[in-house]
Image 1 (cartoon, rainbow, N blue to C red):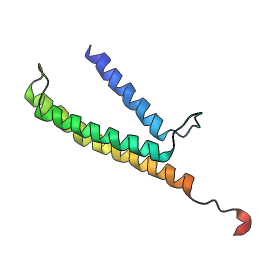
Image 2 (tube, rainbow, N blue to C red):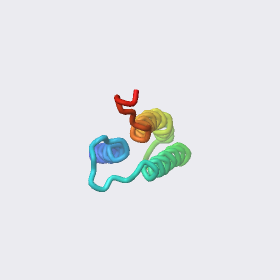
Image 3 (cartoon, helix red, strand yellow):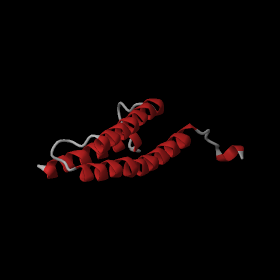
Length: 105
């Protein structure tokens, strides 16, 4: 059962990340502002969940394991989110800067 939970979390994280920073054109892709709001909401929810897991371990989970998991989720998630934000901002910058034609140089 644990393996399915881990697989579910991995796939959910992958699909979320792809929806935020994938370069492929999509038929109904949301704009950068919308994706920024969704990313900030996800980061906020992730941090709250990590702190809650740390402070109030689920039943059947030893406190030390819950604290270690909460810390990994909080600090490890911050590192991953920082990379996602960097890629996302770079994409936004590249699409919004003015194009310079070679003839005008």
